[in-house]
Image 1 (cartoon, rainbow, N blue to C red):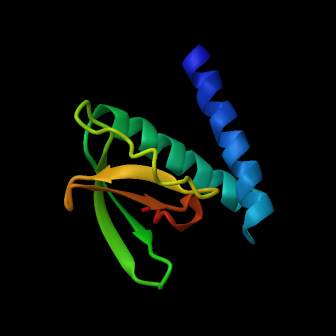
Image 2 (image 1 turned 45 degrees about the horizontal axis):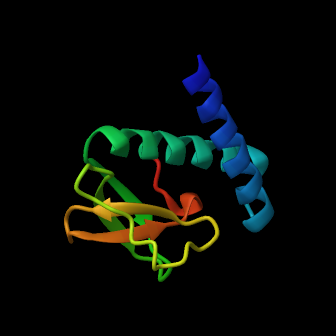
Length: 104
C-alpha cells in the first residue's frame, strides 16, 4: 500500500509540473505522468523499449535501464522535467521530457 501511495504522490507532483511548465491540460498531463512513472518503475527491474519525440521533432527509440552496473553521472546538471535513463543501445546516459513520451 505504501508503494502505491508513493507512486500516486510522484504522479501528482509530476502532473503539477507538467501543467505549470507545458501547455498540457490536467488530464493529458496526468496521463503522461502516469506513463512516465510506470516506465521508470519498469526500468528499475529490466530493460524497457520505449519511444519519445526529440526536440527537433524526430522520433527516438530507446531501451532504458537502471541496472546495478549503471551509475548516474552527477557532474551533468539536471534540467527541470528531464527524466534520465541509461540507454543500452548507445551505452550512455540520455534524458527526455515526460510530455514527449509516446504512449501506445
